[in-house]
Length: 249
Image (cartoon, rainbow, N blue to C red; front, side):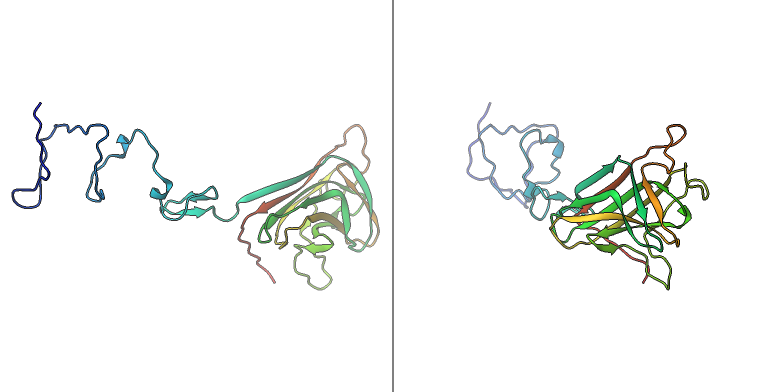
């Protein structure tokens, strides 16, 4: 093996120097340091990087940390809107019967409540309600909604003497009220603007002119044969950000 020692190699003419021929291999001895900016190195195959770790600062612009991800445009950024922060679920299996007053008086449904403590005042809260049961009479007139604390939220705009609510109960068998359960399924995205514990309550009302009884998770007759026992749920999702749009006045 020949050894050639020089302090500098410069092209005899022009500005380029060619090292070896196609197929030649140049071995860089372990411990040798190649100094320079590296900006002129081209056609480097990333598959040849078989060890070491690429610093996160080299992967994209911005600051990499546990709260961001690398976007397709090469930027470290926070996750998009709608990130789920926490879920609080109330799965109701108990049965209940309650007197519901006439003429649209709102009744807080037994067991259908959930309390969540938002981690940020800018969070949105998605409230979901799944209720099963039966109205003792006038099931065609039952409606449902939500309260935050004692404040009714999410209702449709009022118009004259019309009943304002979020959802109408789904009747199971015409106007039968004794052995066929009904249901109500609805949701609402709220902006409580607080980090204090916040309680949501599902309510029921019946606009008929006479009182009735609301049965939760059971039928009116509640016979052992041919009747159902059911479950209900209230669930709150805290969303880090969410875009909401209301179409209406």
